[in-house]
Image 1 (spheres, rainbow, N blue to C red):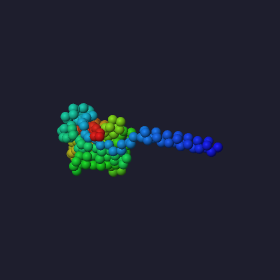
Image 2: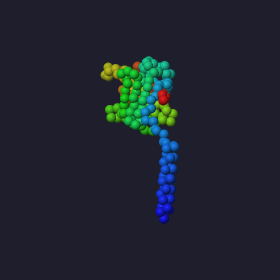
Image 3: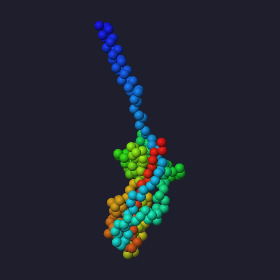
Image 4: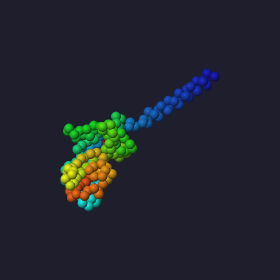
Length: 199
């Protein structure tokens, strides 16, 4: 009886040791948690212009942007580091322009947390080991109306993208039909800066 009991215990030990050997032979790969990217190139995705008095959309070529955004062809940050374990991103210029933000990820979309609010910044593609930083320009000029309103000019570069709905109704004009004075102008451009993994 003791010999059957000993055989059963020996069999259990052999089987359990055999399973452990398999784990040692085929360890799980360690998932990368910090991704370092280097700037590769840029792509102008869209340029949209409305000018009074017709206020119809036009799509000037890329060079038109240089009147409003002189250095759009080069990003401020030549390196980006994404730490998915600590939910952070570092934008690295090697100067006072360096910035670090907490982030949230939604599929491939990356949102920085600024003033407690998520702000879309770009796309992080783990499969292709790439990062696309999205930047946008918005320029709005509103001429005075019958000496009752002052001249208005606003220009900003920001993360993310602009489109009709995020410009009209969120600037000096609610829609293009309000652009009645010669000199009224609304312009926006969207640029993607592409980064590749350095390691």
